[in-house]
Image 1 (cartoon, rainbow, N blue to C red):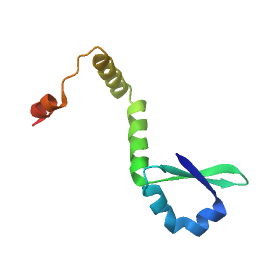
Image 2: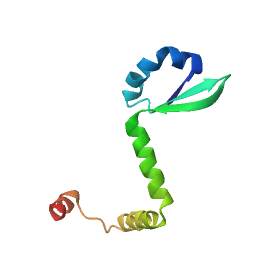
Image 3: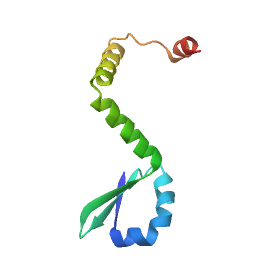
Image 4: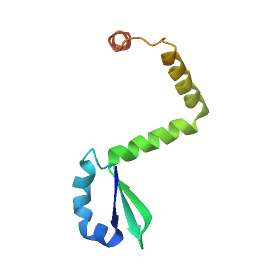
Amino acid sequence: MTKSMTISEARLNLSDLSKKLSKRSTRAVAITKKGKPILAVMNWESFESLVETLEILSDPEQLKAFHKGVEELNAGKGIPWEEAKKELA
């Protein structure tokens, strides 16, 4: 869930934002000015996840591999996690 606060509130509460963003229920905070969002502040884990997702989506080969994997799973061609772990070891 995205929370929001004014830019003035953000200035006053900047040091507390890290605590707020460490909660799983708050992934990002929208910073607003005159009622309109102007910035997004998020915890580092969420930022890294977003960047990684964008990199995958922008790489045609990775996106193709992802779609192929989804098709295989939907067709029941997946293997159990325990078996996959053994193959990776």
